[in-house]
Amino acid sequence: MERQTFTDLVANLPEVEPGGHMGALDFRLRKKIFATLTQEDVAGFKLTPETQAILMSKAAYTYNANGGRGERGWTKAPLADLTQEDAELALREAWRGCASKRQLAALDAAS
Image (tube, rainbow, N blue to C red; front, side, top):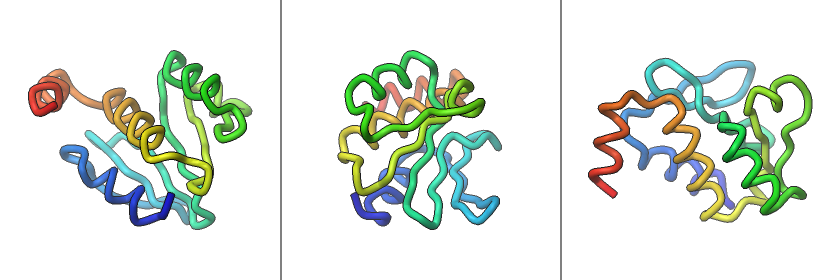
């Protein structure tokens, strides 16, 4: 997946605020980071344990959830290994984890 494709997918989610920290892009909803993108084109997603397990079982060679951050849901994947479908799923689920009830209802109504 190309870097621009990834950032376009993020831009399609409502009310996302781009930012940055530690040399990486980050994407926030309600001031909470739900996804990151490093300069080395590695995407990070803040996922629920259930979503993390689904993605890890689907393509364990792609995803990495090692260490303490991984135990808290942070899951990494090189953009080169991500399909658009998996990136959309991970971004949508990470976004949902930070969304308010109002934002969830608006997204569900638009789908």
